[in-house]
Image 1 (cartoon, rainbow, N blue to C red):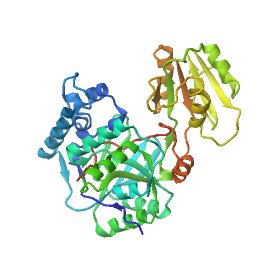
Image 2: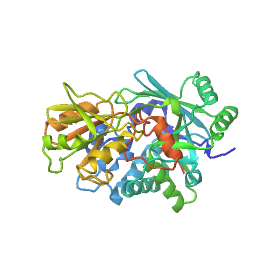
Image 3: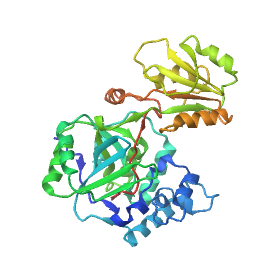
Length: 396
């Protein structure tokens, strides 16, 4: 049996401070948004994950001073006993509820050598600048404070065990700014810790769902500092997670008019005018929005290619000359439940030329891609609800 998923001495807010500390994941808020969220809230964890908000606006967000400020703010939370560390190795059952959707998993540390060996499987490439940012953040704090979201195959024994463990009172329960409830149970009894460990470590592999940059940053920190042996992760069975579409907007039509752009789509899609913009209802459909008009693009090819691949192969690359969507400035990505309204507003305002609403990538597509050692296009999956920052951190 593998032993690459283990308990740890978690660092977390005292229950009376959890409402002050909880923060959205660092990568879903901009500098400006972080500044607004953390204003007049000195214990907010965005002061740690977006420390540039405490420096003059002209300071680059990747400047060394930002990482130094992050450590200063982190140490202040420790010194004020806002954050406290448990004195024994624990697992932390983590449950999120957004509306009627509830997902339950476990916060644990996952061996970086398992990632190196492919036991933690990935499905996306990473951007070196984003990995470097998080690696510097880890090294400055000597801690990992933003958990990676991992998934494992369906596991009836694990699901039953977690259902039993959450019958107790949680360590804390807190609602975030989006109304998602986060509940944490600290599991420190050696027998129960052993049961969780046995459930997870019987899996030959686990998979990165969301957080490739965090996982790669943790691994790169380990290669430079061998004592940084593990990555902080929330691990959830595949049937607990909810994947939404991850949508696209383009700044220009690459010299095409709206009419000529539509004409170039006709060889590969049936095109229907729509009265209003809605999300696709089936695989193979893409919703296109041009200023004032929505279209349904239905693929003429009934193959099993992923929709995000089809968009790139049939539209983005040949018509819009967007080849590397990780770097091209002509494309951006929109996730979350309000993506449709965001795209419509941005396109109608003239800020962006077109938007594409995508049908969600399935969990089966993600696992198949990872098992085949293949790579999805960037931003193929949007997982929601998202794990919060600041609730449980891992001190090296």
